[in-house]
Image (cartoon, rainbow, N blue to C red; front, side, top):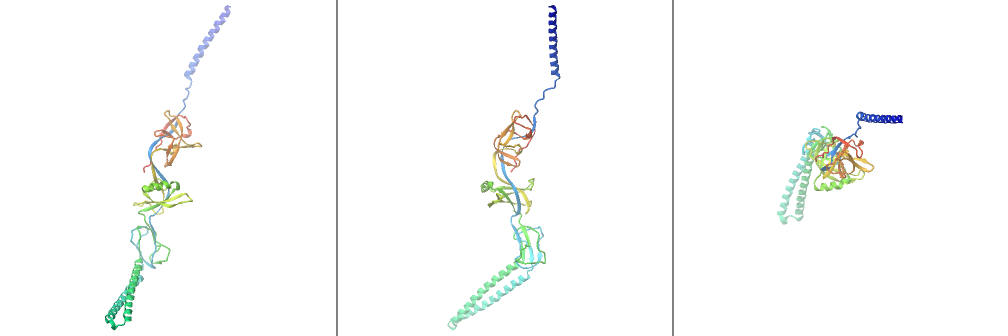
Length: 380
């Protein structure tokens, strides 16, 4: 009996010691165990949703052409005696460009002048005879008087024909001086001094292109035609001409003409804009990028294009809430121009959208903004 109690006491003691040992081991393990890692935030780029006046630009490609272009041809035959311009020169309307040998045409004018003097002398004599027959009265036959009166009328008509011949000869003489019909830039000349030119020839002497003002021909989609016509009826629309890479604005002008038909093969309509071009930044034949200001959306909801994501269900963005968690928001985009999108449904001003790093983000992900994406509206 005594032995049984001793064994019982001994067992209880061992259990108590083991219990204290276990508790101590747990405390030691807790003190030396590695801390549990918290879920890390995903670094992302963000931008604010803004409410701004958004200019709607229609972009395209255009070709510069002279506002007026003249292929200057001679109107008389002859040998070129003088070239009075330099290739590439800015010429003014009325400037002498080429002179053709005028001697044959001056001789023709002198001949026409002499013929008129001769006929005027004959007319004067015929008038004197008519006066004599008239004074003779009954001593002159009626036939003689009528014949003389007819002679006077014929000579009068002949003098009128002489004057017409003089005018024509003087015009032909004037044509020997080929003058600029418009102001512009003279191109490469096609003839040299000493060459024989013909009025029936097809090759121009030189081409002149008017560059002040100058025109740009470009196209716009046919689905924008109604809006363009409506806006153009209120006031001429602004057009910007830029370098082909769009990096630099060359000139600012106005929409001048909307073509009277749509190209059925491309579904576009041709437009013509006019630029003052006083600095000659635009040159005939040059390719440019165009931006037509079709209108302005007032108080538009705008975000960077890079924030917009696509899925089989449509467009969406990730919005960062107050707890720095990503929320998926379906959206509808009205316009997307120059890296910015106008949102018609799904977002409110002041919200924060993720613009970079979305590939790591899921609904409910904890995010941290490492930098922000600018969301500036281009000036009109």
